[in-house]
Length: 332
Ligand code: CP
Ligand code: NVA
Image (cartoon, rainbow, N blue to C red; front, side):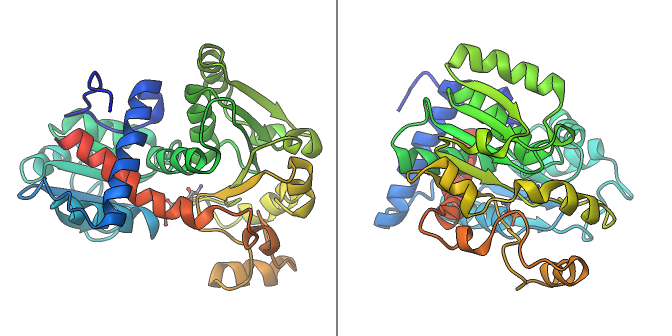
């Protein structure tokens, strides 16, 4: 492990706040913690400390990952759900940050604007971890990078193509992650869904220094051809209005990840998705949308999702190991 890297006391708000070396340090620590978990070696060195887990949007993976990782580290947890706290309604973010800093050694926050988690971190005197905002999903990035490294044995030079809504938290975060780690990122979608110009510009500068690249294309065959990883996410994200479903389905269906896309990528390509995914009608939202628009799958076909190319459940498990690394590194 790199002894030069010390993340104690740091916030984890977006990957762009970290260097390549610091990210590699977190990935190595996550791999070590994963190995220990598999071998049943205890890592509960943070006993006596407590963390607050604030979720202003719903979650399965992120909440469970934070809770199980915290418990493995010996940390106590308090979960604040979208309706069960005063945050933002009767108490400002700045006041909440100072109240919680007196009781907890760390604070996770999932919510809306990135500015909110940044403000929470500014006023908190303990580390703040971003569990997803509209703009970024940094803990997901560590899980994705670990999964890619486990599968391909490296990150440098890996070609990742993101299809669909690339201007939201997942597209933004993956572009930044690839740019930092020397990977080749392609956003394959209509220009309306490309990441914002300013972020793209910054990521292109980072990619030039890391040996990676950033490409934006509307052409599915060009975007998918030769990719190592084909990645997609839901077409409508948490907090977006119901009314956008119609235009999203119309505009993003050409960028659905299906057998043809995986064939363009080639036989060694894998499929990734942060989850949850609409790949069948076995959810209430999926069934409603399916009935309304006469479709059975959305951003990814069930065939690709269930195929042996799909790394989605390994990726989901890695949320826990990588979140454990973030808490361990910033608290001890
Ligand atoms: N990928 C992810 O963040 O999942 P949850 O919304 O279930 O936490
Ligand atoms: N873009 C999705 C990601 C969920 C993990 C959302 O924000 O809902």
